[in-house]
Image (cartoon, rainbow, N blue to C red):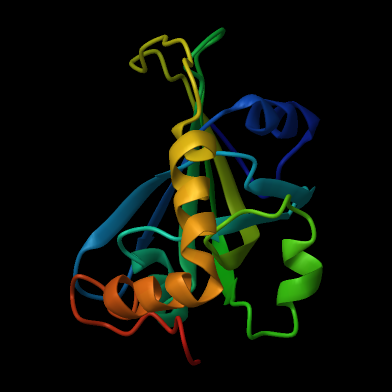
Length: 182
C-alpha cells in the first residue's frame, strides 16, 4: 500500500484508462452511498483536483452528502492488466446548472442528456493497494451511450426537471439534495 497527498503521472494514466469508477459519500449520520460511474464523465484538472459530470439517475445521494459534509472518495480498480486499486480522498463542491461555475465546468465534457451536477474534488490523500482480489473482466459495451443518454435526451429539459422533482429532491434518508436550490 502506498499513500501520498496528490496524483502523479502514473496514477493519472491509470485513472484515464479505467472505464468505470466508484464514488463514495456519507453524511454525518444515515447511510453511506457508493455509486458506479462511467462514460466520459471525469477530468483530471491537475495532481490535486478532479472534476466529474454527474448524470441523472434514480437517486441523488452524492449531492446531499457533499452539501452536508464535502467528503468524497473516488475508487478506481484495474479490471484488466496489472492489478491495482486507487482511492482518491478529498473535499468536494457541487455545481448545478443554476451556478455561475456550471458553464466553464460542464464545457469540459461532451453534451450529455440528463447532466445534473458537476462535482469538483480537491484531493487531500491518494492511496493505492494491490487489487489482486479484483477479477479480470472484459468490457463489452457502455450501456450509458445506448440506454441512459437517449432516455434523458428524449425527456427534454422540462421532462428531466420533472424527473428530478419526482426522484432527486431528497435522499433515501429524507435529506434535501439541493437539486433546485442551495
